[in-house]
Length: 305
Image (cartoon, rainbow, N blue to C red; front, side, top):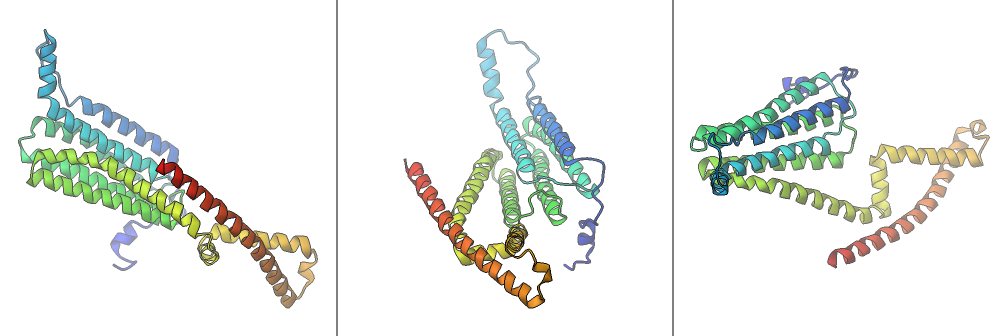
């Protein structure tokens, strides 16, 4: 698909289009309120019978009869909880634009439909249409969550501008969408009882986060390899800026008349500054590598205990 396609034009923001008069914090507060309402509405899907209970046995019979409904409500609660976590874990906004706002509005629309589709599943679980509607609402909500993150990262709306973090977020959201679609297909074609498989979502989410943290811990040791460190420095503008500042600091301390030097002398001074910085890096690498290896061994011993 070319960069001039309708899709790219639709999802590409122009510079200066962020001033919509709504701060990211205000938007997140609004989202939190919608999630709170949706979660509260879930319990209303389990209606008490019109007849009053005279004995405890009546309450117990009602609870047993409503067990399947309560499981459905629990599943919906877990799904809403996962969407809320995704909002705060991945979509940490630095700025917003009008396109993202409308994507967020439609996302919240489907979030508000989750209690309704849950009610359908509770009251008309014998009808396939209720399963279709429930699965459709959950799947579209997941897809919109991924689309919002992809759009925000593509258009520089996120606080975290790190390719590794972006890949992890997209990978995690995509994987959860695949799981959601598979479970919905099992519910429709195999058995409504497959709905309980949605309990796997928080387990999978925690596993993905654990795996990522473990990979990050392993890379902390690898990054102290000199060649790997320099490779990361080239890719990281922040560190590159810090290195430039260190070189300027060296020049200011040792060559106050630097501006009076000719171009060749200036080049030699920068090379000298780089050599001095290389010596400092060697010391930093040795100290850091020892410290990280020590912490890794300590953590391994603690985990084994």
